[in-house]
Length: 514
Image (cartoon, rainbow, N blue to C red; front, side, top):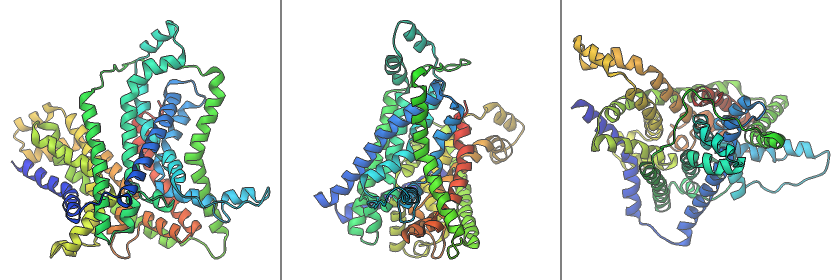
């Protein structure tokens, strides 16, 4: 069967990098001492702390936006989601740039007092940056769940004398626990795989160890194996929990969500919302604008518009190329998984999900290892655009696959059956009937892949062709040299583009204005 053969071949490509890391990592050997386990411990500490904090912040923000009479809640619903547009390395750069010599904070405080700021680095700096930029991963699914919950149970509890806090703890929280857990696990995976923030803020997690020792396989491969194992354990645990505890909570149809009056808590709720949005969104953008204006007014630091246009073109080129390849790969996989049952579709689905969970830095290290130790075509692929696109597709293909699979599952069988009765063969039915109906799902999946590729840093740093730079890699280079104005121009450009795509692909599709 051609579909099966194609899907098996694609799955082998998706699983190959992880297999390389496992085989090479075991071959190098694992040393279980303090020096090798300490980075893993720091990764676990940071991931657990950020996941717990985002669980609290994301759930509170979702409840305020979806269930309370918070003034301007429709605006807050959008603002709460927009920090997704800011990559972690830009958030870390903004924190450092704000407190740098001549930075925004220094300019504000200098008229009041002479202040010497300590170096912004370490666990707490990484914790703040990653928490503020990843809480939307909890906020979005919890808010969507809250909007669809029937208000009858809460109304009954309130009529029986239960207070707002008790009603939330006994009625609301159990029904949104699954969404909170799913979002927190996604945050945990994000933090485990993060490289930019921890590198800039000098917190020695596994990703920082891997990048610093990428040429020393005796150190990098065991660290990559540890990081992959942690990510896979999270994915396995999440899927086991989903099978063991299906969501049996009812969904409200045609019933508006319950609105809880905040009364005397209205002002504190607005203040808390303002602090979250201010720290996560307004502060980074203000720092970027400050350094852009400062760069424009400086005679010797004017931005190079030609270089900016070239970087935008490079970023757009790899994003579009990866998105196109990803949806081409996703279509046959989606038809197999959505239309058939059995071990093979389940395995294909698991392989794609696992490839998404493996950190981009680990994936890039695996592909570099394959290219450097390969011969012929494999060796020729090192630091070429095709290998970079392959890395993007393996890492982010799950986003296109998920979107297209939902679209395939929703295709009406009657339309395809009618075309078959009229004599249309399989390929013609696919091209003339099914793909046009799948266009919204395909475009959404392609958009998500393109958005992720535009912000991707570690894989691009390791695999990009010599002399090829994107907005992400050039931002990184400028921050390493403390060229804050140059980095801010490029960062503001990337955030603006990411913000527009986030609005279209995430906020609007998640009932953010509900």
